[in-house]
Length: 430
Image 1 (cartoon, one colour):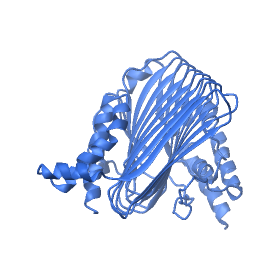
Image 2 (tube, helix red, strand yellow):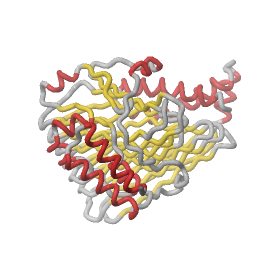
Image 3 (tube, one colour):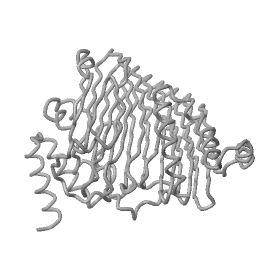
Image 4 (cartoon, helix red, strand yellow):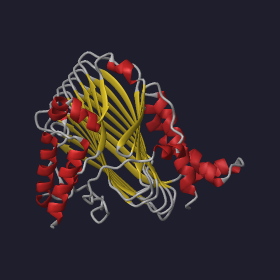
């Protein structure tokens, strides 16, 4: 039996077990057939091709033990979804959203109960199935996710919080997909938490699509801390209509090697994307973060603000790409990427890239890679603070400008707690 035949049979068997609609199974098989013709995506100065980042092709239904969640201290929220592995284990307060016509459900439920909506939006606008090898593998072996649909003229004042917990107690790929659709004149706030339980070496392939309709406003925040032995491809994409806005606030606190691919396509005139990223690399970890904003519509605004900290022997690369397409008159593309290094063995890079294909636009960039200010450090230590605490204070000051720009106080506070925990753990490796 060839590998291709084995994968084909696994997909058919899995689809039958979970009651998946035929059209989606056909899409899986189409993606599987396309794999030999596709290549890995390329990112400037991010060398990941030899990582175990490709999916292994074992598509199986798996039930995780709910008691595993007792190892985590998950914060309560008024509107909450908790998923462990492939399954939803807890929901809270979703009925208040559903009374307004909002749809919030896990991936398999969305396929069964809302096939027309899923078919309309799944990898049609923000990203394509056959964009590259990793996106096609994602479709072929997808097992979990969340579908959120906010109808026209619906304003949700309270945020939705999700916890997606990868079960790495056994060897299995984690393939997860989130779709957020905000229709015309809608508003929605969302906080996503990614974490890992277990120490098994695994691969994660995660894609998030945010489709923002005309005059909509989506606030997307994430606190990501996937495990040390998880190699991750994390792709978050936004597609913005006329006068739509997406505020991205992402905390990259992962412990394993990861490629982050964050894109916002400003398609509609007057659309606006604000992207804020804070990242900390520790140990021997490698994080490559490629953040792109493409201005296609007229008078669009795309701003990127990225600050990262590197400890021990780790590596952090920031790519910031602002692309103004021909015809995007009055567009504004700005970016700032800064990296702070606390070790002589660490490696950091901040690469600003501006691609300007039209006149009558505004564009600019700032980038820096440097070591911790020794005068600041010595001043704090002269006041009696131990070196590690002094370092953490300097780091907080460095990350402060990004945190201050995050619109939600709740997200700011949660990120501060996660940053402190990551720094304390990272300093143990020094």
